[in-house]
Amino acid sequence: MKRHFYLVCGWLSLALGAIGAFLPLLPTVPFVILAAFCFARSSPRLEAWLVNHPTFGQHIRAWREKGAISRKGKIAASVMFAVSIVLAAFLSPWPWVMAPVIAAAVTGSWIWTRPEG
Image (tube, rainbow, N blue to C red; front, top):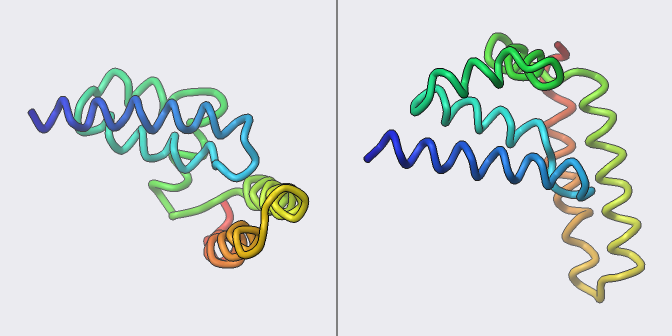
């Protein structure tokens, strides 16, 4: 039962990561890292696939070994936060316009305090 729960969560995380590749406020790599965590508890084959993936594998390994986020990843996250803030400024009423600003401030601060890897 627990294995199936982690397998479903892994696939959901991977799906959210795929969606995040196209939506500015939804991150990709953290969901892929979460998917690898879930697959480690449910499917060694899927975990190995993610850890050895040419695009995401290095990010998963850096996170597991050092809790690190690459400089490129930090910059990409910051740019996406900025895009989300600009979109919200044009499309959202007050006070909802502040949601991406707060998310960027909190999450961006945390991201930039992680080691680089």
